[in-house]
Image 1: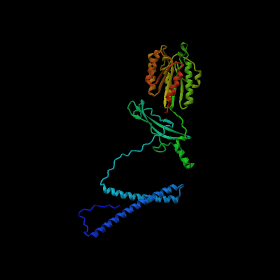
Image 2: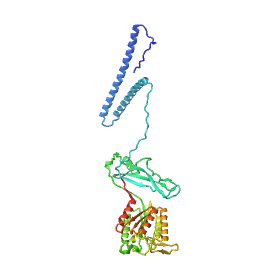
Image 3: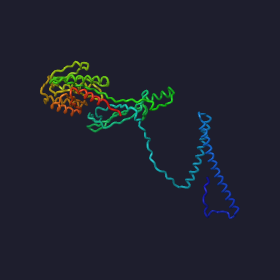
Image 4: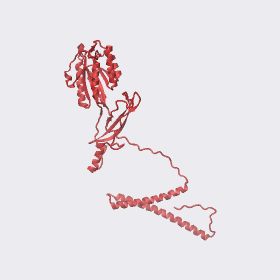
Length: 418
C-alpha cells in the first residue's frame, strides 16, 4: 500500500512541462503496480482458501502426505493474512494518533454444578464433642460446608457429599469444624473409583471413553449416623395397677426397636435397663421373659447405670429412651440402702434424680421420655427433665407407644435427600 502525502507550496518542482509529465507518469505507474500487487495477494488468498476447503472435503482418512500439504497451505495462508493485516494496521495508525481500548474485568471461570438428577450420598464427618479452644461441650450448629465429588458405581453414577458441620461454642463463641477430606486430585471432582475405572478402560482395555449420563441407572440413598441407645423400661408395680397392663405393650415396643436396630442399623447399639427399687441391665435376649416387680421407681439409679453403659460406647450420638408411668419414688443411698416414699415426688428423691439428669446433659446424652400416664405430678417432673437435657417428652398410651417411639428413632437416624 502506497501512502501519499500532500504537497505544500514550498515543494520545488521543475517548470519544464516535459519533466512534470514524466514525474506524473512515474507516480501513476507506481500506484498501478501497488494496486496490482494487492489484488494478486487477495486472489492468492482466495485461491488458497478454496484449495484448503477442497482438500478438507476430500479427506476421508488421515494421510501423512495430504496432511503435510494441508499444513503447509495453512501456514502460507496465515503468513499472507498476517502481512495484509500488518499493512492495514500501519495505515490505520498513521490516520489515527490514539486508539482507545475499552476496559474489562477478567472473571474466574465458573464451574457448573454436578447434575441435579444424580443421587446424593451424604457423608457427615463427626464434629468435635467439645470446643477445641476452651473445652466447653455446649456446641450449636451454625452451618456446614459441602464438597461434591463424582463417584462411579458399576452401572451407576452417584455424587458423594462430604459434609463438614460447623459448630459454635456457647461458652467462648469459637467455631470448630472437622478437617476437609483428601481427594486424589487437588480441587478435583473425580473420586478414586471413577479414576481407577477411567485409567483401566483407557490403558488396560484400550476403549474410547464414551460414557453418558443416560446410560446409567439412578438409585436413592440416605445418610445414616451411628447411635448408642439405652432403653430404660419401668417395671415397677404401677405398670399393672388399676386393671390396665402397661408393661406388656412396653415390652413389645422394646422388642420391635431391638429388631429394627439389628436389621436396619447394624452399626448402632441398644442396651436394656429395668428400673424398679434399683436398676439392672438385662440382655435383650431375655426381654420376652421379663416380669413386673419390685414395687417402687428408682429413676436415678437407672440413669446412673445408663451413663456407665454409654461411656463405653464410641458413637456419633448417645441417648436414653425412658418408658415410665410413675413418679420417682425410690433412691439408693451412699451406704447401699434404698430410701422409699410411696407417695412420690419426695424432695430428696426428686433433687437427686434431677442432679443425675444434669450429669447426663453435661455428658451430651439426650433423654427422651415416653409417659404412659398423665397425672399432674408426673407431667411436671418429666417437663423439668426435658427442659434440662433438651430432649423430648411424649404423652402417649400403651396402644400408640410403638408408633411414637419408632418414629422418633427413625427421625433422628435418617435425613431425606432431595
